[in-house]
Image (tube, rainbow, N blue to C red; front, side, top):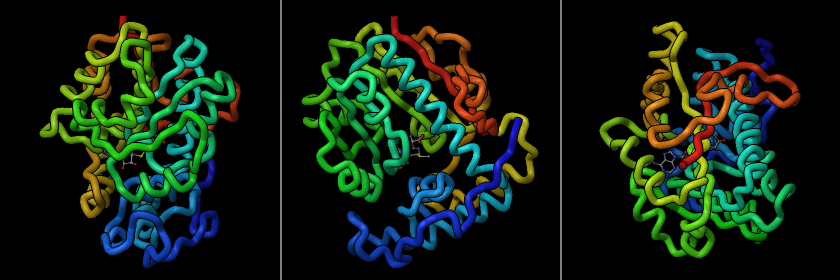
Length: 283
Ligand SMILES: C[S@@+](CC[C@H](N)C(=O)[O-])C[C@H]1O[C@@H](n2cnc3c(N)ncnc32)[C@H](O)[C@@H]1O
């Protein structure tokens, strides 16, 4: 495995620490609390983050210096998994927990191969949604919806979702780096099963999930403590726990794998996996 330097303050932009001018933030206090979408943006070297996000992200980077590389590895997995689904003929993509737009967005990967494809980005975070709407503008066949993975029926009934996605045809549901923000108390397994049951045979589940399998316990605990101050708690799961999300799906080769090892395609091997990923097909 190779290691590259994590992003530093000088690598990223300098969003106004007060949040002034940032869509969706006026009067919300969004700038006062580290936000998991914007911390992730910082790890990726993005500039859509506030001082409070950067401070929390730097604490995580102090504990796990390769977090930036691991975030890139997760994005590379997402691109490969999306390309795989397009190659299987899927033309509808429901990206739940989409986060802030970044390089290699799902609609760019999908529509470079199949321009007629539809992409729906969903996030429950109002700032992420506001940014996404502004940055994606009027990208064709692409919509941004505010919705919550924990309420799949509401999400699937959203008029923008029903207008874009035909549930009688195969759809790729992306749950990439999002389920580790949903605690067991919110029954993420039931939510994933509901999405599975609502989708047609031939639909794909593209999933990645943080694990602490193999991580030393003390740093892992400190990392989780940083997230306790943020907008969402971190819930890393073990490999068997992550595998359960694929109940009712047939995993494609190589199964549930470390992210860097899931069908590597010759892109520079970023190689630091903090999680497992896989693609399942609903038969
Ligand atoms: C680490 S980012 C992942 C972004 C993108 N999927 C990726 O992997 O590059 C996690 C995103 O999930 C969103 N999120 C967390 N819990 C959610 C929920 N219950 N419903 C919808 N989005 C959620 C956060 O707001 C954040 O934008």
